Length: 431
Image (tube, rainbow, N blue to C red):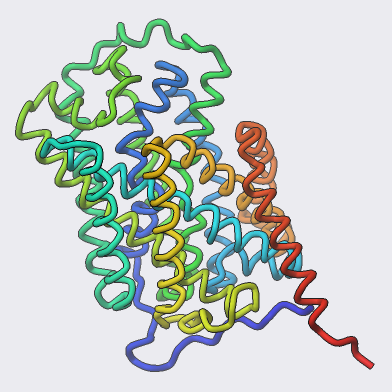
């Protein structure tokens, strides 16, 4: 089946692309930095001790060619289907369907993680039982649905404000806690060996995932060939410095306590600014949660609409797939899926690490197939092409770290193949 033509840009005044450099950078920073700052420093310290710094640096370096290749793809093929569109153009409809399902059904597993991470900080500040965390987490899912239902006219300015708060939070936590850093806490450096570093790196894929999320909004960018590469470069610097600085203060300030904290940012500010610092962190953590959910909910809805447009989901969700369109039907479907995963998280006791690892395994699968598509689509020998080649190799290493969690993207791939077989069976043979 030939690849479908990309949707034409909308022509009405309300549907004109409206993402410039500032908002584009904000979307990238929110997608990649996001709520990982709220818990990942603790999870990585638990897995690798001070050597978690090596894991952060390694994943940051791996993200550079990934980000560069996705930026090159987004500038050449700005479509709401994002990676699924690139894979469709390069590898055909079955591979594209797999990619779309990995993102829409697999990466969406991260939605309850984001909501519950923010809720943990709010409840830690106010005091309360575990059921309060679930209640606040459910409440966090509502505002992003409302802003995305209205469209970028409202969601854009809100996203700028939320990302600004995110950057301020990171800077504030590092500056307040850094004077208490003790280099002695870096010894022993690798208490769990290189296996621990690998485990921490696998967790940190969550932190550096997000470069592909904004590709679903590439059609909303003004002058994508100039804006997307610049926004990507700025976000790479901001995110890299932020995560390295946070991981350093986590292991050097908190020491052995770094591996057991549920709210590491609160514990860090308590060192230099007790009391009022916890309140500030909780407030900003809630704001950050809303910002990240706003970006991802918008991306899920756009992707869902494009999957409906291409026949990989029911056609009724295709409304709003065009640039400038508001995919309200796909937004409802994404909301239902997020609610289902949230219910599963609550039913299993709110343990977040398994959800993180399922999310990252799906991201690894998306990266591997997306980079294979990039090698075919980008001009051979160009900077983007070389970035894609390097990223292909790095994706294999990330897949090895994912281990048995790859069973989730494998299962979704089998569903995609089955859907394709059913569609072909319904098409009468050509006489």
